[in-house]
Length: 491
Image 1 (cartoon, rainbow, N blue to C red):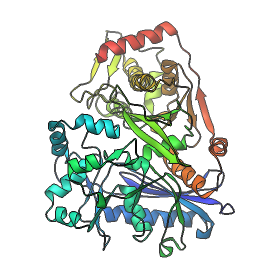
Image 2 (cartoon, rainbow, N blue to C red):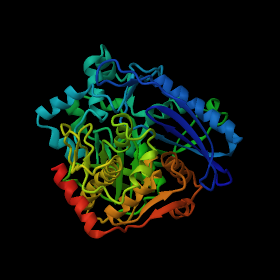
Image 3 (spheres, one colour):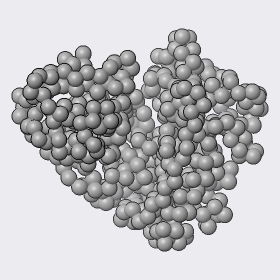
């Protein structure tokens, strides 16, 4: 296979399906993208059309190959990355979905979560899966469907139905129904995977009355995992890489050693740290998850979610009208040397990890007659960085592994002042890569290793290029003061 030169990465997200062709140097050659729609049938419910997800993903794959001018026979393999936790249930014979996809954001299975907590099963789920029971995860979505949709329970018990996350749904369709599989990273987000055995937990399946025969076979994240139908893309192609989006981003950032961590600065922030070859249990309600599995070796990670990052800047724009464009926050904040004692706790939708207080509300403290919009802008950037610091501190405590550096991506990672504040507050270098398409890159890297296009992670590290490294500095006393004011404000 090594004479073939490109990888096709399929990146199925919540709001769009994308396909990117990468060359052997790990560089993007072409990209195609198509939006997907979300439905909100009731308050708190979020659904999608599984057929639209499949059709847009197939369409972008064909479009990206066309744009790249790549012969299908030159594609060494396909890598898949996807929105995690979203559930699709379909008919084993016809392949047709039996219900809209229940998206990770949907709260419609909250009653099932409340029920399992009331039965005292919360600690068992956390112990087995490394997750904090929540409607976010896939398990209670399956239970909700079986309990609430007519005939589905009987059909599931009769073996007529299959269930899976988006990777499983795409692979079933790509292989013409030949493969019903999921990789360990996606399986670790279902709230049904036993982290120790890395198989479905019989105890938890029984607790939620989910028939095991519905679920996919669990496979590694890299290797020869299936073949596409020849009529879809013009040739049979091997699928050699699968990972959920945040794990793919960790791999795409080449966070291959314990203590390596990445943060994606989006509307919120997703922070993952590689913790090595055994699961590290969190005392700070961080999630223990599988980072990837390849060459018969599993790598684990700790994950922390921050609710408000980029959306804090959007609030300065839309709520306070301090700026007209989110990109203006950097220039405004840079007009003052410090926030002059102003602290902003951006608990606009509660506080995420490691505090986990959904009832918390935002606050701006330390305002004087001398406070200007620039001080509030700078305090906002500090707040984004301080929330990351809180999660990193919890991760280092839980894992016993000190942070060596933080690799960054996402929209706000382009803000140089924010990245410098982040480095100063963490006391380690903050590293921004040239290629910020880290999710699709991770899928491509896993697929390229799985088909032998690249032979080692060392080869990938040679391909990964740094745009800029922000070295820690700043006045130590001033930094201690910022942290002390933040801790007091949060508490």
